[in-house]
Length: 91
Image 1 (cartoon, rainbow, N blue to C red):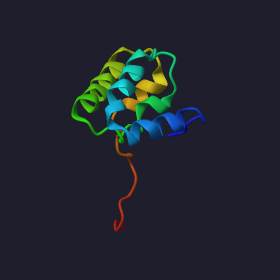
Image 2: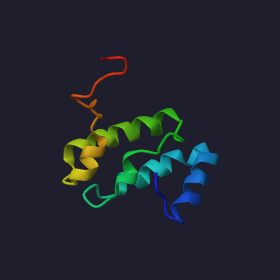
Image 3: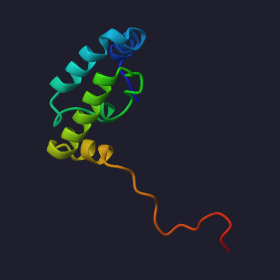
């Protein structure tokens, strides 16, 4: 995840203080999905509390269905394996 110089200290604080995880998700929920970058699609592994973690998953699903941001939607979709390549050991 590429972070600005302002985002990094904020995320470090949230990671160090799990009690801030709900507030972090509040901020994510307030972001307009049609205008955010791809950074919102991943990099939330430091959220370990059950309720905020569930909220992030619900938010990802909401963004996947509702956003008009095609790059974000594509980033949130499960990755499909490459087709047509030869596997190792095939001759």
